[in-house]
View (cartoon, rainbow, N blue to C red):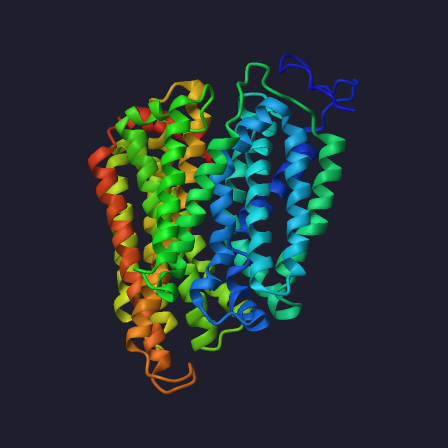
Length: 500
């Protein structure tokens, strides 16, 4: 039976059957689900070498689909997920997304080949796009505006920030002591608990004023991005001038052009282009796209360097990234008070520049015998400090000055842009690094002398290009974002919760 929560007002929030909504239990259910969605972006990273061996994947381009498959559909369907939740019922869509997440995780864990695993990851991303906005909306329904909601949003933001680190460490533990398959299987019991908890403690709610939802728009933009990534990933194999590569690029262009046409004609478009009339919103979203394109290289290439070249165990690789998460938190803590003093624009220049410098050091100094303590760790910390500054500034700039009724959409656009940028960037970087390795590698098998240096040289070029993406994000932020210090500081608390 569908229950509708009583309107927010004096007294406790009630289910339609008269039961009081237990806010603490509701927060626990929502927090667990958010953690599952966030950590699945990173949990497979440290398992990639084991997956490659188990499924016989020789190409790092093909291996990258395990990461990009999730981020593509998550970013592509995120806005649609929010609109479906508002229109059809937030708890209903949350439960639907969680069930789909469990089924996709089970399918991925049982996969016997790369194709089935990628399909499962695509389905996981779609499920996450249904779960995340529905969960955040339910959180704002359960907790009334004020101190309690701010505390709940603080927990939500902390989970979103720490999810990547937890995913890397948990992925290392499961891969090392069980199997890479358990990085996917672990979601099944968690999802079951979330569904049972949702049906018991979460109220149903919907926005009676919500408009329609643009399914064709979501399908077109995600299909266009998948075609584009496929062309970039397979370009080295098929040949960049081959009919297959050019055909996929043409298909991507057609689908994305149709998406723009549909958005301009739809009564309830997925993306309202009027938001981009604000230079600051445009600058923040483009900046997020380039930041995502640059940052994913750190995890993907370094995990392969650690495990395939230097013999790190999955658990050691997971812990090797832990200082990066700590540095991001420190960078964000530094940025928050600075935002009210200098505004977001200086941070949007300095943050990406700092991150680009750390990435460039990896590109120029990483070799098969490079020291973790003297080269990798300082670079990771530098990149992370820059990202901490950048994330805070992007978050505030994306919603500052935006009308209240559009703040949620503006925040979702920022999140979607970062996920899509990550997928496209990783496709470009793996294509670039593979081409460099192929040009330098000696003839023969990967076991031939000289192959490993060529492989690491390819990853180095990938880091250099990633540094260029981050530098571009800084140029865009400095050129486009025009937000006052007061507007940025006022927008930050609401934006921090919405972006999660």
